[in-house]
Image 1: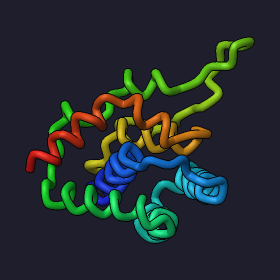
Image 2: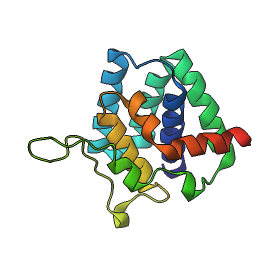
Image 3: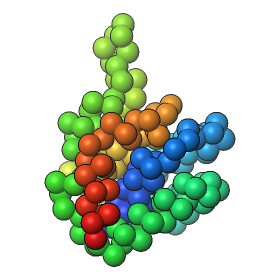
Length: 157
């Protein structure tokens, strides 16, 4: 699951950063369902959730074109330098708070460090959870400077 999960999510975030259009309502709804499935059963990523997630991406030819470009680059790269990954501070800036209660309206789960599947980066997982609950993930991803740095790094290869 580890490298596949990390690369799939990062390729999606990179593709969203390049994507010039907002996702349509059906795409958002389908993606939210995938994120909800993941939150409930993260261990089903490889067998059930990732194929559904990729099928949604493939349904949008331009998004899929960007996704495939980045997925191939990440798979060829292998290990991603830590300084190019989203940080928890960056992700926390995307979590919205209710003005009256000051509680998070978009939460993130993440695994405890000791139960994290091997090689799954908890910050990538948390970014996945936060973007999954965002009303406009294609706008939110533009706020992650690490995704821009990763994109520049991959474009130089």
